[in-house]
Length: 341
Image (cartoon, rainbow, N blue to C red; front, side, top):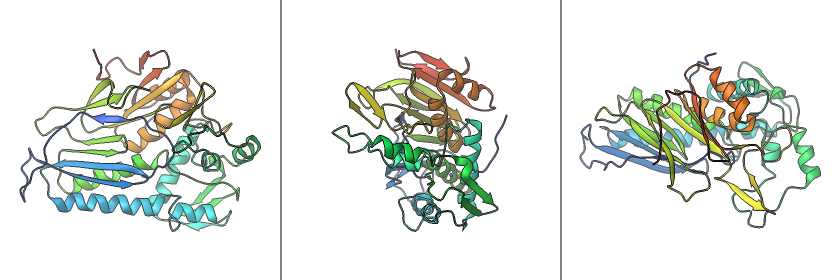
């Protein structure tokens, strides 16, 4: 099956494994940069560091990329009081009319809820808000009864859409697009750069990497995949990609340990607790970053067998699964993944 859509977001809590662009090119200082010179934009949006590097462009293009990030944060973040997602969550079941972009992303989130059998669910917010994987040093767990109540409000099928009008049929349900919005925004940034005539760029939204074309010298970008639970910068392997998205999710980026058990940010929508299975990491390679964003989380929750089956049922999508025994499982033998010696 092939999913076609225009794609571009926020994320505060859903985890993504660190993806390390293996690139080092100095930014050009001239007013009209040559194709061999790059400029960078770095900012903090969606509670994560955003970086866009483009070759052969001017500062005005990078400044507009920053404007795009700010626009989508204010549109999609549930933590921005005036955002459309926050408005839906406050409405307690009353209809809310939203922009084309929000409606598009909500439909895409619902689509991945269907594809994953509910293992990817954009109404996870009622449970995820009860966990603190960022500052929790004592290993405090949510109250079990409170978490059980929260889980009763997780069900993407309770989002009804009529054109651009959104209604939550469960007034206590809450939406958070953190599992898909960063990828969606990366796609929007790429669309803009293409429209500005840029041929070579790398977009990195907190580990969601999307490339426009290849390197200016005609070679592929090489993307390093972080080794789970290793020191930052320790690479498990590299992917050679051009005009592609690379997104990873796993149990090692945001977590705490209590009584020998690792509690991480990827939650099971059926229980509200961190998913416990044989996987440490899933990396998705796709054309659209929103697809990779959603699929990396969905496949992690599904586990190796069901996650691999989902990937192999889709056109234009590949994956690398890493199990807790350190074994690599590739969706295709032709995947350009190179392990470290």
